[in-house]
Length: 434
Image 1: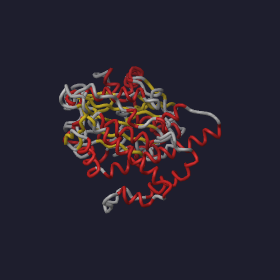
Image 2: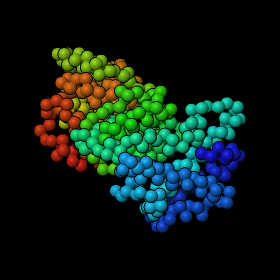
Image 3: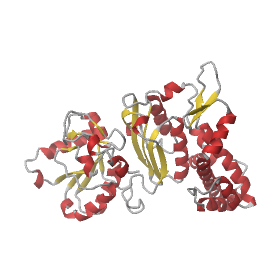
Image 4: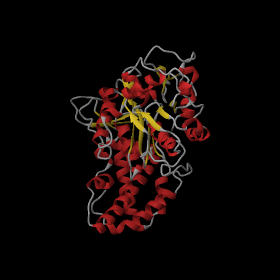
């Protein structure tokens, strides 16, 4: 954001943002949402709005940049809506006429970011101290500065290999406090579009949860950017990204949004926090615990419960031997299941697992909060990481995934006679956490 904007302009700007957010941005009756919005602004904030709009427009155009097809040509071209644009005038005209709504929403994010920056600046001045990380994330760097340089790659290198057997799908999450999820949302949208990634990214004040697909080069660049981002570099490591064969074709589109929870359990993070989860067990440690559990002659009398906290259609096609698989249709039903079966968990050691580990973070925290279990453990990295180390271990069957692959196979074991595709054809859209 412009450094010349003085802190004492904050009140006007905050009023501008409030007016902006009060408008119905999805109202299709607005022929030009930006024009209608601008009428709402008073004279003192029109300049700020105009500046934010220009930044939003420039950012959107930048995400469409691709290297010129000719290697001898150093110019930048643009690709948008399956069309290739070779000059700025044509891409600007296209964006202005076809993407007014996106520019409108991006303008809102920039205005909100500026308001936060000014508010932060005032509080820092009053306290006479500076937080370099906060300044970095709240205005001293625009979204476009956190996009990787792809000018050294040809379009074919970046886009090719997006087929189901040539590209990759990344699954990851990171629980950490985010003060401005809307800024992160704008950055993630720009980043994924910049790298031609599709998938789903869910952002909240409690963290980020993503599943994205694209070429091997694009997914590698995405991981590098995430690991170098000041917000996440102290929380994420390369091992936190679970990789499987796939690509951009595994998702119909890119969806990035801000929500209350990064995985929808239906309970506010302020009531059940990710900061109080169960004890994390590595795949090797979890394997030993399951082995010990299965070696017991009478598992029903055991003090250990192996709990699958996924949905019924996931556990039906694959699960750990001897597990307890709740008959729930979506994760938001998990708390009710626990409440109705508290006696079952009384004085038990609970070994929890899910696809990638994220549901166990909140699920184990909820179970621990009930105060009935002896101990609560969870599989770090989920089934994904377990199968990487133990493809022929105690997990039998396929691994359900929330994309158009439907299921992944790591071994020849078959739990359900029906194929994952036939059984779950309509479940991806109906039950995806998004």
